[in-house]
Image 1 (cartoon, rainbow, N blue to C red):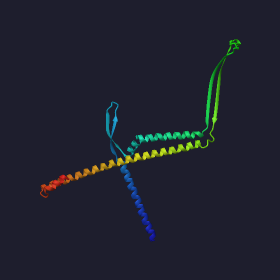
Image 2 (tube, rainbow, N blue to C red):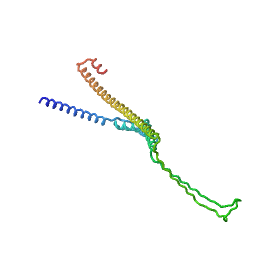
Image 3 (cartoon, helix red, strand yellow):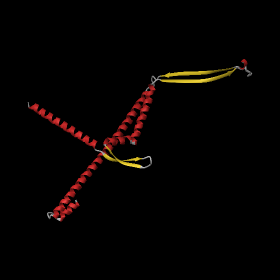
Length: 226
């Protein structure tokens, strides 16, 4: 009986911790989504003037802008496309090849004897000559050359794709660090403003107490310094 009660208590504790953790994570996620920073957006108009306005951007917006407009990311993406093309080219070695060729000739002939005199009443033979060929080839085995090229292409594609993922993670990490630094500085500014407000209230009370004769002049001076 005691063992059952202990298990029930452990289950309740685990359930409470699970609910508490879920609520905490949801609250943090909601705060991140609701938090935004003000960015000065500059737009060059058709008349050459610059229009400046503030826009509110969240963390997701900042990440998308950074990823889509980063030069290094774009270079690595083009390398991925290039590696994919090289792999496709290597794989095409095992595909059947069909080659079509066509040729057209126009022939004109006039019969003549050995002395160059035209014979057959000077009649001229004319005709069209058409020639077409079709070649079909299929690679059976080339001692591993094509297979090796395919393996190299796959390895290069994996390496470049891994480099792209690393670059994306680095950019996202840098954006998150800068984003939370901005939020931190903004909170510190709010805290400093509240501190100034509190010190001003303390100064006002010190002046009132001094006028009432309860406090000395040094108390007022200390409040002014604060």
